[in-house]
Structure formats: structure tokens, C-alpha cells
Image (cartoon, rainbow, N blue to C red; front, side, top):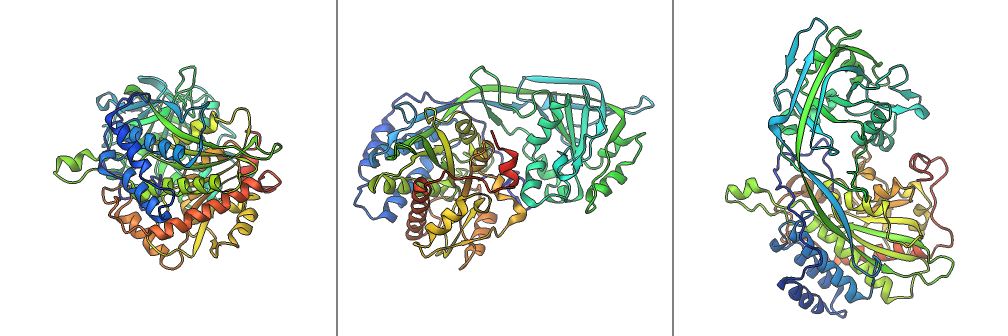
Length: 561
């Protein structure tokens, strides 16, 4: 689960190992025989909760080394899931194979190559110090970039939203220039649409489409509070990733943006030397409610540079298929997803002689176990009318990458993606009495779910944390961006669930302590799997293909994708 933008994140300083070159996914190893033996020992007659416990313990074992995308530990986990899908009777979902290979590009910053200088109108040059004054992020399109003495334009929040009466680009020309904006988005939006416009990828695309060649972001007061500078620069060598198109292009949201940077709040005023308004004035406007700062040309020029060490790697999505039984509906596919990857090894802890393996038991071995059990039920009972894809996806922790690749290249042989149901980090540490389905209120999936849940004795709860914008933070959102009605299932906050969630999040999330010793309630995990099955079957059998509600923001935004 990706919560990197949340105000209460306390784990950003963890230094994770760089992605290793991907092992050959066709190779066999002695472990393959162990996997086969383990899977053969998971008897279909074994108690459901015990089968799920076995899945979680195997996937979250230290031997998997945290299942980081592109590593042998992840590949071993992928082979295990494929073996489990085969054992329960699913068909291979990628042209007769289990793996959809996802080509990745991984990039590690070359810190000594990062630079920024700001030239004032009187010719004074301010050379900034990397990490003390700024952090730079080169585009993954090239190994290095350089922007020399470029003009700059302040564009408020960098948001183009004319449907909401807001356009930071209305009266400025940014072609060939560096745009300067505040992180975040104006408060004129509701929580989820604000999260969309707050996205750096959305901002880069907008700036790139208008010809900008670079971007510099600044903190609002809220952003500075939620991401203090020391935390923001704590892991400057972190390896980022993206997937690669068949023609070799790295998938980036703003191809004209050569690089972007974030300025320390104490250095941001330099950008407004000689400007029509001071930095203090525009930041006050950005922090105020109800009105965003105006855009205008700046008087300073900027030079920026950066470089990356780039490596090609790969990692597979594991894809199973349950063919539909209805001749008229079988080419419509319900996609069940759960991410298989986690965040790997914390080398700094290991160097201290501590446990540094981030096992990912709750996040997200439990989600995989639930999905496997739901798939088993779908196969064991009468075939669903629509076809169902079971996808254990890679790269979620790297930016929802495996799901994004599948959404761009679905293995459905010309069919239609009808709906997505996603499972990610169900915190199964209490006896749940309700569930949350992020996004259910946005499409006809909501009523389908409500009807299905009547037989389970579990209620559907509203989003208890709308300010955290969970709807845009997991794999289902990549299907939303393709216009597919989607929901993301979680355990509810009733009956002690809220306390258990926050305790897990603050003390175990993305930490070595998220291991099989967590007091996971496997009987309740089995109940959740039953609910996932009931919902998936209801969606697969509903006469009408799921559709977005009229006037829904995301449905309208991504219609036709």
C-alpha cells in the first residue's frame, strides 16, 4: 500500500536497497521443487483459514527477502502464486502462460551531478546546495539533463481545471520555460478530485503539454508540516522505477519536463526577486481558504542539472483466468487484483545488526491469500457468466506500476475490462463487522455490492478517512484511469478496527515488524475472502455491465479512455 503523501508518514527515512537486475523468469531452481511440494501439501479439504495462513507464512517468510520488485524473492513469490492458481484450477491468463512480464527501467540519482542556480534580475547568481537547499529529480527519459538560464513562470498550484472554474495557466505562456508552483491543490475541490489535481504526474503532464521544460515545486504551510525538510531529503539515493513501452520509451507523465526540483522553504523567496508579488504574499494566498494565488511571469532565470544511473530490469504480473460461461458476457472481464510485491530490504537496519527484512505479511500477503481463496470458490462453484481475471501484480510499492502496465496491456484477447475489485493491506487484526469499499458510491458497483452483502451479515461503511484520499492510492486507480468502474476493499473501522488500523500503520507499516508474527485473525481473513467471493460473483453475473454514475468526477474525467 502506498501512503507516501500522507501527513502522518513516519517511514520516509527508511533506506531501501536498489532494485536488483531481474532474474530470468523462465529459469528453474531448487526452490521450484520446494514450491511444488508446498503447494501440493495445501489440501483442498484443509480448513480455509489454515490454507490462508499457509499462504501468508510462505509469502512473508524471511526467505522471500521482502518481495521487492525485480528481485529473486519476488520471482519466487510469483512462482508460488502461479502454482497455487494452477492447483485450484485456474487457467493461465497470458496466452497460455502465467506471467505477464513487465519491462522496467530503474533509476538511481547521481547525487554529485545535481545542481541549481538562480540568477536575479541584477545578474546576481545564487548557487544552491544540494539537499540543504533543494532536491532534484531528473526525468527517467534520459541519463542526464541540463537546463541553462531558463525563464521562469509562477503558476500558482500548477492546476488546470476549467470545469471547476480554476486555471493556473489561463494568462501565462510557459513554452520553453520552467514552471514554479506550490505543492497541493486549491481547496475548491472535494477530497478525491483535489487528490487528482494534487498529483505530480498530472501537473507534469499539464506543464509538458504547454511546452514547459522544467518544474520547481514549493511547500505550502501544510506541506511543510506534513513533510519536514529533513524527512523529505532523508533518502536521496532512492531508486525510482517506471515501466517501458514496446518501442523502448520510458512511461513518464510529462515527456518535455527534463527535470523537476523542490526548494527548501528558506530558499523559495529567491524565485520571487523582482517579481510582481513577493513570495510571502503568494504563499499566504496558497495557505488561505477559498482563493489561490494568481499566476505571473517571474524575473529570475534558473539553471538546473541532474543525472541518473539507469538499469533495465523486469518483474512479472501473475495472471490467472476463469472463463465466463455466458456466450454474450464472457468477453467482459472482471479483474481481481492484489499486489504481490513489498518494499524489500532496509540495508541501514541490517548494517546496525537489526532485522531489516520488510516481510509484508499484512501488506499484502493477506490480500493475495484472500484473492486466491475467492478464486478457488469461483472455480469450485458454478462458472460465473463473465470471465474473471486473477492478477497478482508487481510494482505497487514503486508507483502502482504492474497494475498500470496491465491496464494498458490487458491480457483479455480483445475483450472489455468491465470492473476491477482490488485488495490491498486488509488489517485483519480484529473481528470485523463492516467493510469499506472505496469508490463504491461512484458507480453501479455500489448497489451490486449492497445487494451482495445482504447475505453476509456485514455492513458497508462509508469512507472513514476521506481526507486521506485512499481512492487514488492503490492499484485499482490505474483501472479507474482507463475508465473502468473500480472498488478497493478494506476492513471497516467498527468494533475496534480503527484502533487496530492506526496502531498497525504507525508501528508496523513498511517495517520489518509486519511479519507473520502479527496477530492476524485467520478465521476473519477467511470471512473476508468469502465476502470478496460474493462480491466478485455478483459483479460477474449482473446482467448489465457496471457503469459510472452520471456526473461522477472520475467517470467523466476518464470516459473513453
